[in-house]
Image (cartoon, rainbow, N blue to C red; front, side, top):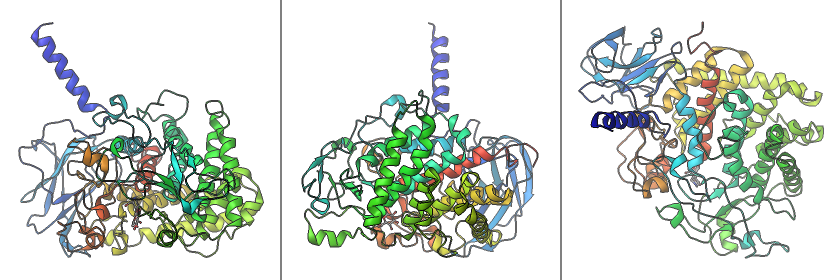
Length: 605
Ligand code: 9MR
C-alpha cells in the first residue's frame, strides 16, 4: 500500500467515524472563521423543510434584518425582518424573533445577524430528528445495569458491567414470614434511574409506560429503527428489546408470595461519583407500596398486550406479564393505601435508606392507570368499573406522581377496540384532552421564545425538560384526535426548546448541538475519564429553585427561565433521568413518524 492509499483509507475511516451513530452530532460543511454567538437561540439540530422555523435573538441589537447563509457565510439563501424587540416575561431580557418558516430548501445553514454574529450550524431537511430520536432511546442502553457495554455498541463509552444485583437483601421494612429480613433474592438488569445507581419502580413505571406507548402509537416507525444494541438483529423491534431489559428486572420486584411490589432496589445511601463496576455497596429491596404495585400492574398489563405480538421470539412473556399484573392489582385492592414514607420507615428499621424517595401519597391516578391498562388488555369490564375513570375534569401533565393521562392516552389509542362501558367515556376524554391542548397552545405566540414550554414560571421545576417533552406528547395526542396540524407544530416548538430555543441557549440533550449539556450529574459521565458525556441523555434542565435544592455553587442566573448550571454538582438542574428521556423519545419519534402526513418533510401541506 503506498502512502496515498493509506492517506485515503485514513480519510475514509475518519469520515466513517464522523457519520457513525456513536452519538455525537457532527455537521458536514465548512464553518465560518468566527465562533458562533450564543445570543441566537434555536434548535441546534435543525428543522423540517415545511415546518415552522424560528430563532430568537437575545440582547440589544440595532439592525432589523437577519440572513440565512451557508455555514462559511459566503452565500445568502434567504433574508427576513426581525420582529420588534420585546422583553422576555421572566427575565426582562430584550428578545427578537427571526422567522424563516417560508424557506424550505434542504441544506446546512446558519442565521447571521449584522452586529450580533452567526448562529450554530443547523440542518434543514426531512428526517432531521432521526438521530435525536434514536439517540434518546439509545440513552437507555447506556443506562443498562448488570451487563458489559462493549465498544461495538457503546462506541466511545464502553464500560464493564456494574451491579449484578443477583444477591439483593430483603430490607427489614419489606420482611414477611416467607421472606424474612436478610433473605437473598435476585433482581438483575434494569436501567439506572438517573445519575445515581438505584432502581425505583415508581419512576420505572412512567418511563416504561411512555416508551411502550411510543411503540403502540407508532409501531411501523419503531419496527424500522436500528439502535445498534446487542439485540438489534433479532426479530423484535429495538425499542421492545430495550424495554425488555427493564421489564425483566421489574418482574423480579414482585413478591411471588403475595403479589405486592417492592418500592425500590437500592443501596442505603448514594454511591460516590464512581463507575458502576466500582460501586459495591450492599443492595436491598425495600417496603412494598401501593404506588409501586399499581404502576407495576399498569406496565405489565400494557407489556402483555404489546409483547403478545412477539410470542414466537419471547414465548410465554406476554402471559407472565398478565399474571404478574393481575396479582399486583389484587394486592393493591387489599392494600389500597400503603404510602412509601421514607423518613417514617427509617425511624422503624435499619439500615436507614437515604436514596431517592419517589414518595407519592395520592394513589387515585395510579388506580386509574392500572385499571385502564388491565381493562384494555383483557376487555374485562370489572377493571374499568373498579375505579372512577373520570373523577373530575382535571388533565394533569404526566410526571412520576401523576399518571392519570397515561390511562386516557391508552384508552384513546385503543378506542376502536373497547367494550361499551369504556366507549361511553371516549367522547368526553377526547373533549377534555383537546381542551387541555388548547390551554397549552394559548399564549404561545406571546411567549418571547414562542414555545409552549415556559409560558408560566411554574414550568421550571426539577426535571423541567420533561415538562416540555410531556407537553409535546399531550399535543401529539391532540393531533391524533383532531388531525389538526397546529398541535403538531406546537409540539415541535417544545422539541425546539429542548434542543436550544430557550432562555439558557443550551441543547439539553448530551452529544447533540454545538452548545449542549457537557457536565451532567451522571456518575459514569463524571467518572469515565472521557471528555464528552455519555450521549443521548436529557438533562433535567432549568429549575427555578435549583440553587436551594442542590447547594451547588456557580449559579449566576436571576430569573426562573435561566436557572440552569452545566455542572455535575447541579443535580437539581443537570441530572439526567429515565422519566425525562422517555417523553423525549416519544416526542422526537412522533415527529419523525408523523413528518410525512403532517407535510413537514416536503409533501404538500
Ligand atoms: O424527579 C424527582 C423530582 O421530581 C424530585 O423533586 C426530586 C427530589 O425528591 O427527586 C427527583 O428524582 C430523583 C430521585 O429521587 C433519585 N434519582 C434521581 C432523580 C432525578 O433527580
